[in-house]
Length: 432
Ligand SMILES: O=C(O)CCC(=O)C(=O)O
Image (cartoon, rainbow, N blue to C red; front, side, top):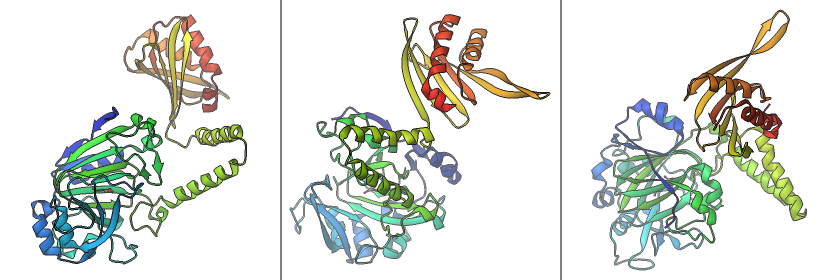
């Protein structure tokens, strides 16, 4: 077992319709919505009911000898079976009729009726016998909905970790499912191949092959029938059916519709500007490959740095540890659009948070800076005010500065040394 950090996915019980877009969606984190009306499917979609109502229309499925599907070794086969057979076999543990072994498992991810699989899945048009039973959550604007996908799985089926490019509500109707999600920030630790992670066994990964996987944070939950899991676009997810499972997921366009690839029936092709950017990076790497290793490394760093200087990616942050009068002092600079946040700590914690606002006062035809100091958290006394006001003068940036101060002493000698370091630090100059 890996010892990665595990965070439970928060559960929101009986939310009001407007709470989803006001409160939950803006956080861009997974959430379980429990207790919402998903229609009469809850409790009704048993194996018997589904077989009887949908009948024997042919559907495409994945069949595998083992539950853990592996897109690298392709330990599954694509087959076509009548729907009622898929339901029967997915809901039993041993089969009389089978393709590979009598304990094989099945996974149905509904598609459109187009034989080349180019049609977007839609429960209303492709499963009219079932659509009356299922309610799309009321807070979704119908015109933004891209697809509604019926998913049926045998007990034990585990779908590899992947991301999708649209926001998604996965509605678990029958059976329990374990969901494990990773933030898009964990991309460096997931060893991607396209939109999928090459780490197939997420509970006991091969750490020789995937040593950085230990750094992931796993957001986990067990979905009960009736639960709706919000999976924000770009969040990686890995799903294991703990029982015969039936679910419907609804993808919707959370970005301008123009950015999505029109030839994408699955909702997992990168948005057009992103796939263009990836293409350009690939071409850039090809150009670099004829240079010696040392040059390649240097120019790859420059490429990454271009992004940092442009400040396009969330918050530029730099961390340094220096020695001030024998005390190890951590300094973290983070640049927000309207503020610079500077943590100065000799205790490994944030400490007193002080804001120093810099405004310009106009008098006759000259202007001068005026400062206001406000303690937001912690010690609100003269020593902290004076220290913050003293330090701000060493920072060349024009915007207001938020300090988090946790120093062993606030003597002028200490503050001067810190100030000298701040004044000369190249990343602060870059922030200016
Ligand atoms: O629950 C499943 O079977 C897979 C769900 C999934 O991958 C999705 O909703 O994007």
